[in-house]
Structures are given as C-alpha cells and as structure tokens.
Image (cartoon, rainbow, N blue to C red):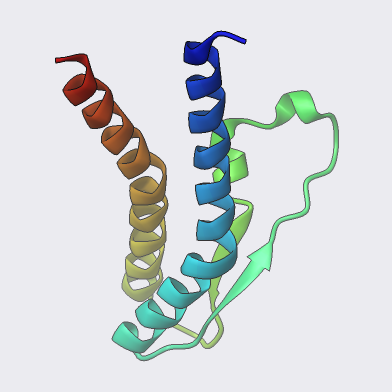
Amino acid sequence: MNSQIAIVMAAIISYLVWLIIFVLAIEPWLRRLVGWLFGVSISREIQQYSGPSSNLSVLDLFDAYRWKVDQPASLALRFGVGLFRVGFWAMAVVFPLAIGLGIFLIARR
C-alpha cells in the first residue's frame, strides 16, 4: 500500500474517532457546563428520522443530538443555549481539520 494512502486513511479514521469521542464524552460535559452557566437543566434528545435517506442533509445529521431546555425558558435563553451547541459542534468539526492542515503545511516545508 502506498504510504500516502495509509496516512490519509489514518487521518480519516482518527477524525471519525475524534467525532465519536466528542459526541459520547465531551459533549455531555459541555451540555452540563452550559446548563450551569445559564442556570437551567438541559437534556439531550436524539432525533428520529423517518422516510428515505435521500431527504437528509449534513446539517440534519449535526442536529441528531438536540439540546432541550427542560423547564420553561425565554426565547433568548433557548437561542443562547442553541448558539453554544452550534459553536461547540463547529469547533469539534473545524479544529481537527485546521490542525491537520497546519501539520501538512509544516511538513511540506
């Protein structure tokens, strides 16, 4: 096997492992942290998708683990919680890619 292909496959597998670790270990901790910051309790509900899979987009998959404020809350509070959730997901998706690009550019020199 070509060494470049092996490196790309290792990078893809490690990225997928990172996303699994984020969903299973880090995201619940961040959910509790945001709940503590806003003084509310936040639960995580898993969205159930029905119908043909051709109707799903990548954004639908990112919304699979939705945060829900358990008690009645204002729109601004729910928006703030949602903004934190989207921000954390964006960091989880973008930072490993940026680190990988940085490593690639440094190694290329």
